[in-house]
Length: 241
Image 1 (cartoon, rainbow, N blue to C red):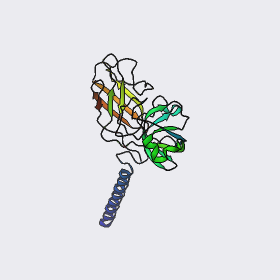
Image 2: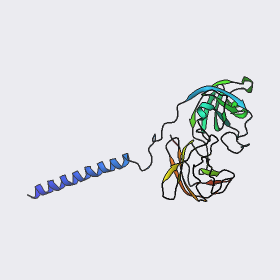
Image 3: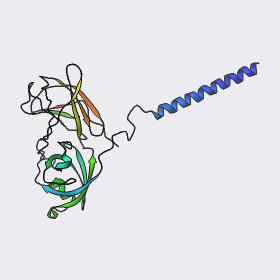
């Protein structure tokens, strides 16, 4: 009888160990952070031609001039898509090299797939004397530091709201604002890259929710109204694999 009790106890302990091992395996297979590859797939690689212009970092995307960072480009009109690429970065491969540029402008005369690069960027992929060269390009993460920022347009007040997202790692897909009842509403985007609600948002502070094109969301609940100045958010979009 004692032998049977000992055997039964050993079996119970073995079952418990098997259950513990299975539980540990489940925990390891379900990490608390997003697993690699959880990002929305990037837009497909594009093919076209590159030209160049005397860029200063400003343009249709309504960013400030950036004399210390002239690795910039203007997106062709079909792909510009109502400022959808503004502030995003692409890696461009040309006949003589590769360069990463930030989209700051629109090129109305360019065909789908074409990019109009700054002189400095074009020189990284071909001789300036070439004038126009074949390229391929694809979306990459921008090399930014610090959190995203919210830029209120000059002239913004409690009666007129125009807000822009800056310093983001990936292009912005949607910007939402929260109303007094707690509901989130997507703000319409102008071609010059400001989000302008149909109804003014009041004196602030504002609650914003920014979505990037890779599926990430950042929420900031107390952004003050400071016309013409950028206000930092709390975080930056994570980098996709």
